[in-house]
Length: 201
Image 1 (tube, rainbow, N blue to C red):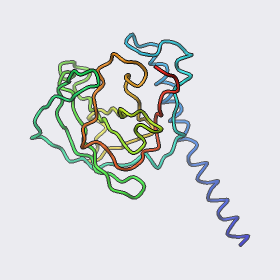
Image 2 (image 1 turned 30 degrees about the vertical axis):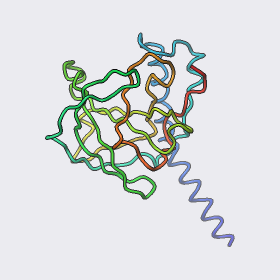
Image 3 (image 1 turned 45 degrees about the vertical axis):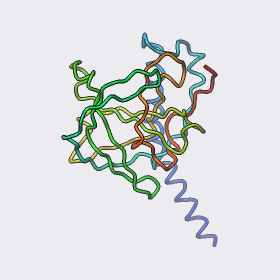
Image 4 (image 1 turned 90 degrees about the vertical axis):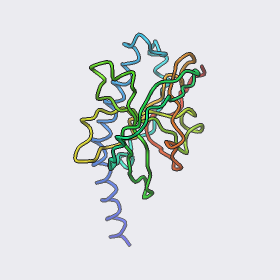
């Protein structure tokens, strides 16, 4: 029994040490994320006081998963609704298949057709989603992840839900935030990434 407890203690310590560099990576990402609010002219958060109400799950590498990519070259463009009532033209780029906590899941990743006109965003990929935490511990309108086509390697890409972030609509009204399509509503809880904003609108 004593040996079992010692072995368990060693395993837990090893796991904690293995998580540390990853936790530092996520922490650096979040610091950059916060600073972008202050430097962006269109940001809904203007002060360090506003930033103090940003909340996140603790970094958890189990929500950093490898997804298999199935391209959808014949997908038809469509108008993705936003919470302002406007629409934005998108087209499905690929179907992502992955596993979360032992359960197989799928999400569709999109290209924003307006951004195709801008050279710096021609390879931009957009992943809006909701999950079982939406409206509870996370923003009810869903969360987003951003990628570049170069993130796809050998038919796969890494989905790091620890970097999932809220749309601007989570902080203030008046923004055109895309609504995640019904096929991008996950039945599982993604307890990673950004939580609900801690300050009332």
